[in-house]
Structure formats: structure tokens, C-alpha cells
Amino acid sequence: MRTEPTWRIPVGILGLFAALMIYGIVIARYAPDIIGSWPGLVQAVIYIILGLIWLLPLRNFLIWMETGNWGVKPEK
Image (tube, rainbow, N blue to C red; front, side, top):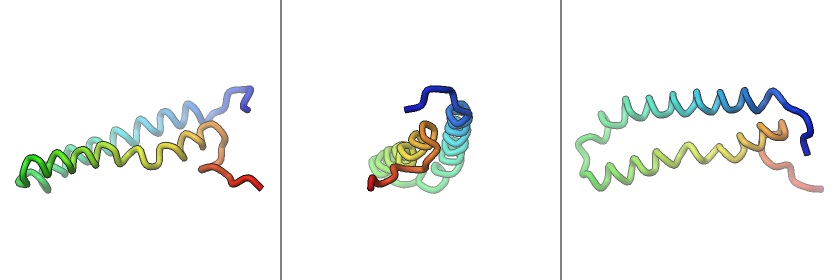
């Protein structure tokens, strides 16, 4: 368990914020052009998927912020 501060936490928070801003701007800029003419229900499903996709790498990213390792190391 970590007992002293580490640079990874503030850098990780700022990196996560920047990545989410870029992701959101890209989705807001390009998704309507691509799926804007599709039926509303299909658009809703696509936007829900796009809204959840950023969660996929989040677990490993948070583990890196705490431990410095990307993901969980298997126990021997």
C-alpha cells in the first residue's frame, strides 16, 4: 500500500480530463455528421455505446495511477 504521494495521481487526473475532453469533442464534432440521418432509436443506442466506451481502459488507468503498473499482475 502506498504511504506517500506520487506524481502519477495528479498527472493521471489531468491526463484523464484531457483525454475525455478530446474524446467528447471528437464525438460531438463527427458523430452527428455520420449518424444524423439514422433513426432516432439507433442514434440513441450509438450514443449510449459511445458514452460507455471510454470506461473500457479506465480500470487499468486507475491501477496505473495507484501502483505504476498497467493492469493487474498475476500472482505467482
